[in-house]
Image (cartoon, rainbow, N blue to C red):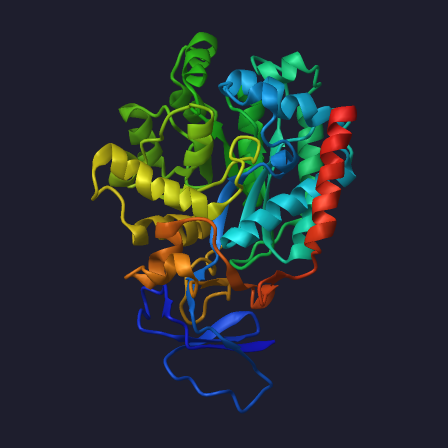
Length: 452
């Protein structure tokens, strides 16, 4: 499949900042520049990008797609993380069927596509002793149908431990043998190693502190490294992580992670809100990275991750939307806008730049996920890109059109979105999805959760 994108208002490409035209062939960007002529050696579809700015597809490095049907649960609107976990995700977890999971995943991926994302790392943790494999298959199916890259961060819990959500809702964890057997089954069926892989598997215990044993964590870390898989978890989202690490293991949360082989270049953590100077030093020294989720952290009152200090220490920052039960917009663009503003409010107007934050949400995320051919608009890279339509009244007064979507935030309109050179959005319509049908199925799913 070949495409020629012509006459864009601007293109976010540090290597070719003056480009207005992009040629795509066989899933790759093969040429960039101005006034490119149509190809003569193949059939090439031309796309008029006038009124649009072109960005690399955004890369979401932490999500919980199952939560897309758990938005705004009344009892939990003003709860902090601990109580919220019991009131929302762990309350509904036993009621999530494969069909319901499929509709939830479609909704979450739909929201990401509509905001400019082309890659989703889903921290899917709905695994217990009797989990059906169809529950996981539903996530892969939804991503395949919508044409998005999916990195499935396979959650695990091998004990209830101090995880209040599991305790309150009687969720029986997997055994370590079940975890390893099921990981290997998924790896064999789905995982791809390439730098432009459409499917990747990551080993992702849900919590290092609350629902995993130190020995079990070491075994999972060894498996991940042997198989060349990424490693992911939550850490230091709230102060309770630090308190429990000290009480249970006699050491800080970051030192506990290191003692269990859970720091390193293969590892990234969501949140890290309560990172002190020692934690930042250990993260930087080991090459461990962060998925920054400012909307969810604000929604739950957890605090603000010290990502400016982290970046200054050499830690690579990426962005995640977290689950829609604590970040109801499900929008990567909102995360970028929030990050840009939030750290300027705390540290002054030079703390973040628009270009810096857009790189957090694209190239940094792709690198973190091992997608080395993704996240940047340059010749030879995979053709993951988004055309934002800024020929609209709310953008008309903007003097810096290339960065207008990030500055102005939602709502945005996407004219085209490409993943591996294939349209996921075409003329404003998501391919292979009927919005009315999706809405009806999601509403039915919410009622199913409430009845069960």
